[in-house]
Length: 148
Length: 467
Image (tube, rainbow over all chains, first blue to last red; front, side):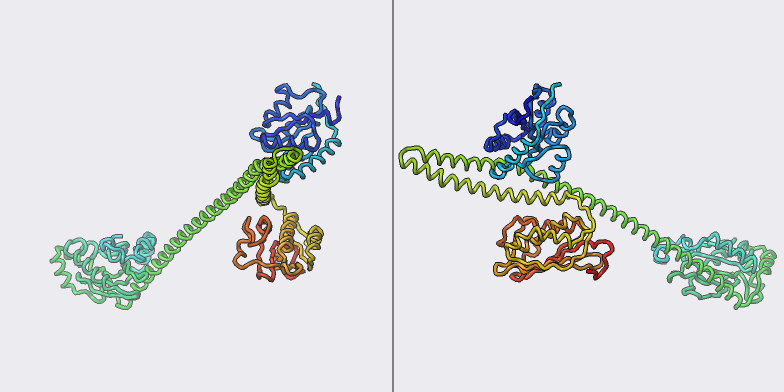
């Protein structure tokens, strides 16, 4: 069982190609080189998580990055489902948002997200946040998905 | 009513009421019958000018069986009646007249609001012993059975002129009083109907107003939601513009570094350096600056829409404590500007504490930001309770607001000439005040300073003049 961060796969649900690329680049720029699997919307993400398609590998660590606003199944709904699923609920979830609107942020915390990330506005600011997130990644014990 | 014969309604009271509308004829007939039984006096009650008999009691045989029974003599009866009743032109007038068939009648008008609408007649009697010869002639003329006719004549009482006059006046007054009461009744009923209509119209207007208000609230909510969604969606592309422009800046830097260590023809190198070190960064800088500005505007829009959605939770706000906290948070800004704040005692208010805090932060922030360039800012804060409201006064010695801009400063995104900022501090402050049941006003002199008055509901138990 790998519980160190290097073994963690980042799952990113992001409908905007540009945002996805920017987030990935910013991660790499601050030295986070974990593998990233990207999903184009909430449904695709949920299909992967819920096992509708060959998805999560048993015994592997995952971190979920969820864009709040996505067409169809949005990030908040995916977060809800993840936190209600006994198999998934220990997976750390970081919400991606374009604003720091307290209403959204509070809702996500209420639903059990671990942190949130305002999408890159200033390069330096984002790098700083990711560094803090790095710290967070080390602190949070990334849970593994138990084999069914 | 048979008065339509005149074609117009001008003989009617208020142009619409005849006697039958005003009195309960059935009851009046009962009264007359009792009177006739008690006194023996005949009564005729006729509408006017139709001369239809509405009530007739105690009529003598000589009239009913003889005079009215023959077409020729009956025509004389009607003609005499008409002559008599048409002579009645003012209230209280009594006319005693001998009819052309040899008896005496007496009548008085019922006049309501200047309209002669009925007449009360008594009579079919004599004021002195009859001229028997005349009645014999009439019997012959009209073909009556003379002994029977004379017997009927003997039934006719002889009364004094005064008695006849008094009785007639008495009956006329009764008819008038009854008619007047009837009229009053009708008017009251009509007024009541009018009032009822007015009330129901007012109620309808109120319901309409409520409906409009509900729609307004709904529209406002829609508008705020629209603002919220729009600003969120605007942020999406902006993230890409900003993010990738930053990338381009970095790539340009990398390009310059590569250029620096690459050897090539000097003209080509110079040209590339010009592009990578001048034109491209300059262009990117414009894109970045503009997107930053746009980002600031969207952030401002979001905070406006956020305020619209947030519910106010009013509670007693101890303003002295709250202001202390606000001033601590503004200390750095204030010290930097070399400013001073003189804070008097502030009465508590009833409002949402977080929102009120934001309101005063915005105002104080402005007072420091828009200080006069030649002097350090001095801000004076005070407050007093006036009739259930607290008025907080915030006076500064800043650059002031030009008279022509005083109204615009409350508009979202309005910025006073030559001022920086997003132009949302004051609109948000005003919305906060309004959402908490208060208001903000400003007085200002350009070059001297401004005074903001923030009015909020006073905390319970606060009385006038209490400090």
